Length: 202
Image 1 (cartoon, helix red, strand yellow):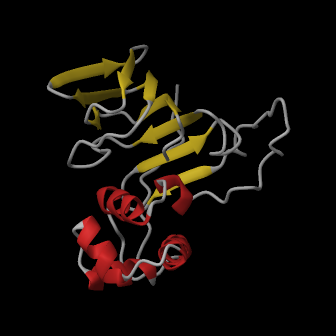
Image 2: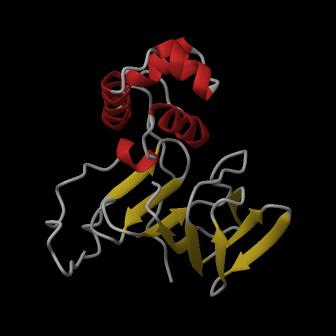
């Protein structure tokens, strides 16, 4: 099996960085939050947040998670345009390979693609590609819900609470998402995995 994922690095000022920053700013203003309020909540400086909103900074995945939490967004809201998938009344939806909605984290080496049509369902399924060494963040995170993942190719190290686990191709894991968790792609080959989460949190 080969993996089409390549290291993804968005430079400050790139179209994607500008779009992410614009969405973050729009959501912050719509929520009536000041830069200083978001800074207090996220632990990031007002100046840095302003740079992110203007597309002048290339935030880490961890920083994006902090900012999304601070303004009441799911991190996927920064990357995926909602409402352009199937109507809510659809009973089924086929997503062709190459047509999936992508969630790219600038500079992280991680690409997520939605296997479900959008983020408005009762659960989400995600195709994950990550370069060796790519990580979900330096600190564990938790959220409401449950999740289950299976490694298709490559390997990953997964921390859940105090447990330190190695997952290889064919291995799967289920967890209560309220338990702090994080992961890193290990080995020399790109990681490919499928992840299912309910309720959608990206």
